[in-house]
Every structure is written in C-alpha cells, then in structure tokens.
Image (tube, rainbow, N blue to C red; front, side):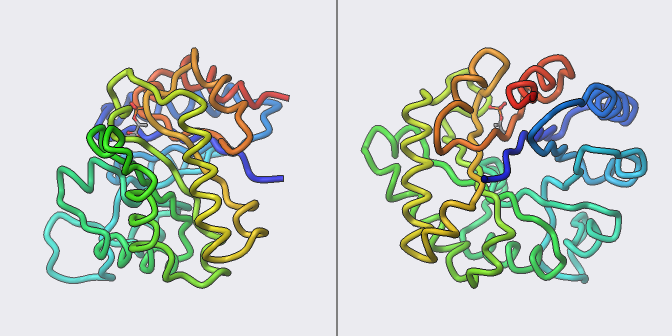
Length: 249
Ligand code: PEP
C-alpha cells in the first residue's frame, strides 16, 4: 500500500507567532489519521517549529545545491538538515518561473538533497498554454527525465512527486479529478518504463493546485492520487484539518 501524504506549503506567509500557532493547532487535532502530514515552512522558522513538532513532519520550501560558499542569502541542504528538516520541496513552479530555476539546476538540488538524507518532494506541472496545445504529457516527461531519471532505482525511492498544473495553483481553478488522475497514471507509466512496475506502484504522487476542503475527497478518491500538496488552504487550520480528515480512519 502506497504512503498517503497531505502536505502544506506555507510559501512566504505568516508571522513567526502565527506559524507556531498554526503548527500547534494541527498537531493538537491529529488523531486516527492514516496519512503522513508535512508542513513546508519558511526556512527561518524551521528550528522553532521542529522544536515543537510531534506527528507533523517539517520540511523546507527551498535550499541551494552547493554545500557552502559565497551564495549570499541562500541556505544549503546541509543547513536545513542540521536543523532537523526531513524533507525539501524542489521544482515548485514559483521557483521555476520567478527564480528562473532550470531542470539542470533542479537536478543538482535533487542530488544534494539525497546526499543529505532529505526526502525530496519534486514538483512538476504544465502551463495552461501547454495543456491547451495538448503538450502536457510531454512537458511532464521532460521535467522528470531532466531532473530525476538520472537517479538509481534505490535513490528514487526517496522521491515523492507532486503534480501541480501551473494553471491551477492559487487560481481557484482545480484540475478535474479525471484530468489529475490521468496525469498521475502517465507519471506512473514513465516511472515504470524507467525503473520497474514495483517502483512505479510504490511511488507516492500528490496532486497540488487549488485543492480545498470541498474538492479533496473527490480528488483523493482516485486510484493514482495519493494525497495533496496544499498551498492556500494549508494556512487555515480548519481547512487543512478538513483536507487531512479525508484520510481519517
Ligand atoms: C502550491 O503552491 O503548491 C499550491 C498547490 O497552491 P494552492 O493550493 O494555493 O493552489
């Protein structure tokens, strides 16, 4: 049985006090869940949130591939690991688009994260134009080929994939559960082709893009959707808990 995950990506939101309060509210309310829960927090809050963590895993939203050096303003994979991070987001469309992160740079990040025993949440997704041109499957294949498929099969076991169509992120426009599931199946086929059926079946693939308490149940009920990467709805404890509760026993 594949691991189910609900992960919140807080992005550049919340004061320190609000962040502690939100994390505590989620920790205090988790019971009988059959999924793993993650908070991807601003790096500056990692230490204080990790210090009070119980069941929720805590990860960073970004880190630099180089172990150290003259990279003003950056933090390394090693630094976030030292603080107790268990995971890192790599390839989020905001990093690709706003910070010009290329597939090659993301590949370096993947390698650095794995060298530091971090679980990689690798985000992939197509633009609206690419979907309208029916190029979405090809775009995702390129993203995986260029940044992930150099890994050995055993290293690939530390990868969680998050399919996040760019046109659905923060727009209120969700992919239909059929569209999302079809892409998840495509990703699983690519993994099977590259590695094996066993690895394809074992890989957790999350959906992200305007997932909320109203649509989570329908999305997560699909055979190849193993949970969600949640942006906006992870900032309100009641909404995030309601999404997690899809996996209540
Ligand atoms: C995200 O940024 O990873 C995301 C899924 O955002 P939202 O849920 O707000 O669309």
